[in-house]
Length: 139
Image 1: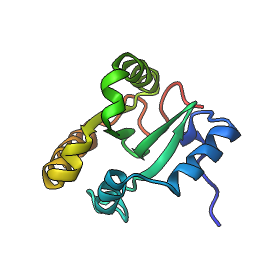
Image 2: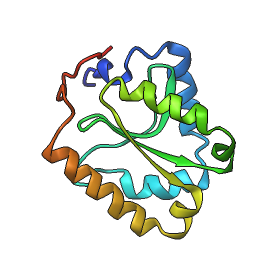
Image 3: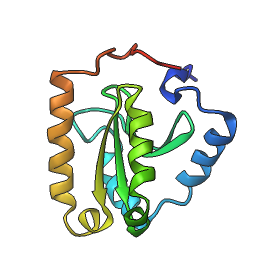
Image 4: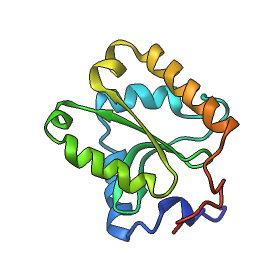
């Protein structure tokens, strides 16, 4: 088995790694819908991970090669905008780009969601994160 690239976890502690493993087993319907479109390198040949630990957060989906997080926001996110903004700011410290979609977008317009993701992926492939794969502030 190949060695894991531990830098992609940005110093996530064992309890966060375990929580992510548990979340992978209990994905929401919308997460499953999007995962079906992201898995197996379907987007520009890039590998996305689901329920991926980044420091003390767990991103819905993450592509380490271009440092992109894709989040799906349910109703609860309407009441926690400030928390989500802080969470995004913390991840952005690692040169990670975060894009968010609402549950209804994934459920009712998945093809448009995929088009938006592909557009951002293509932008990031043309202009990778500042530190490239090595990156700054990496754990």
